[in-house]
Length: 320
Image (cartoon, rainbow, N blue to C red; front, side):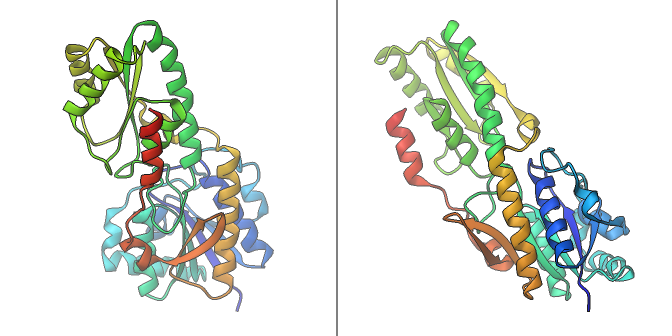
């Protein structure tokens, strides 16, 4: 019986999603599968909002940011009756399998469908790099490049005015963007959820940098959801000789054309997802570990904590 798969993107968009869509579609078509693109994630699956794809459907999208399929938050998908309706929509066109591209919330939806007999494979795509079961997620490298470019520009003006730039980056509950950006930008302090936040320690370290090391400027990279960066910048102005200035980079980190690494990673993961599916695999999420493609059971991945690279953080501290 001929296989028929659907592709959807869910959760926050990330640069490289389109490259993954392209790889999944073309790899599946090369194996003579029918392929359907599903608009707006699980919402589109529930509404039956999909179309049959061919090679031309994914032409010229490799280098584009965002996702041509769109994405939507659809918390109602946790309802078993909603899931049953989505499966009915799939069966109308003979769709028997799904490749879902997104983060851990996307994986949970796929896991629920697997329990109801639908073959699903997950591909990790989020700038936060917070998916377990993989060293890197699609979009992380591009977001890091965006942060570094923005902070490099901030440094130029910061040095001219004896300022301390407090820059908030994304990451959800994962500090990888803050840590990697801190290393790449030569930050004095990187604040991540894994190491915690202490205002007193930040102030003491900035006073040390100013008094002992005679820094002309300072840079503090802060992972989101840990503190109010505007208030922190005010305290820095009050308690140190630096003039504190806060910058929230926000959703600019999600945009832009994916860098070559993300295009390559998305292509490898998309092709491997179809290989696993074609070999009868289901309920797996794709990952990269030591530069090799791996497949981890979704249920196992969801209970594994995302590893924080303590050795990398220790190196940052030595170099700051």
